[in-house]
Image 1 (tube, rainbow, N blue to C red):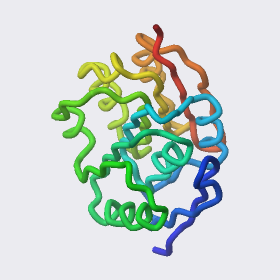
Image 2 (image 1 turned 45 degrees about the horizontal axis):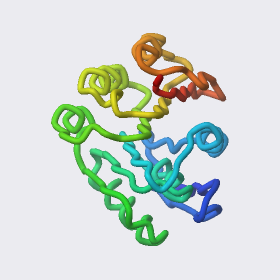
Image 3 (image 1 turned 180 degrees about the horizontal axis):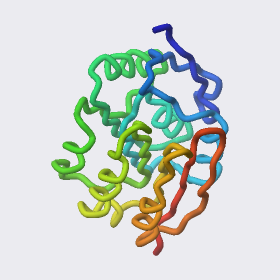
Image 4 (image 1 turned 180 degrees about the vertical axis):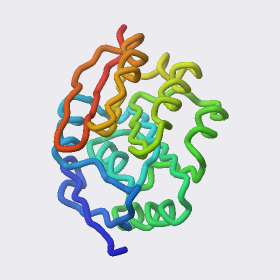
Length: 189
């Protein structure tokens, strides 16, 4: 399949391009949504991000461009991981860790659950997103978390995800645009 291009919308790398291999499962977060995320979520040189189902790597690139300390990207497709590495080298992004693993396996076995910002953008045509939210909750990722970004299909919007998240977080945004629903939540103090 031909490749796609996506622009970073803000920060030091604003307008720089990330190239990605277009596939049916890879759906980089739209620029309008990314701008909304980073208008709501504060990142600074202490912010540590976790990017689950990282795909093109655009959410981590945006966070790092805007000043995040680092990002851990989890992606199960080896070729996609190779592409992220190549693109991050081109952008001179070095403050990241890329883990080629299944997200469920990672969440169950990862010993570091302290991430300020968690991006969760799972494949739409699966029930894996609810399993991920439950694991994030049950494995105490939400205890040390400040912000959560959750993207899901508007057609298959799962209200139960919101019920789980709102046990510990306040909803800042829960909106839809096109075929995408996205939620931004902040941990209650």
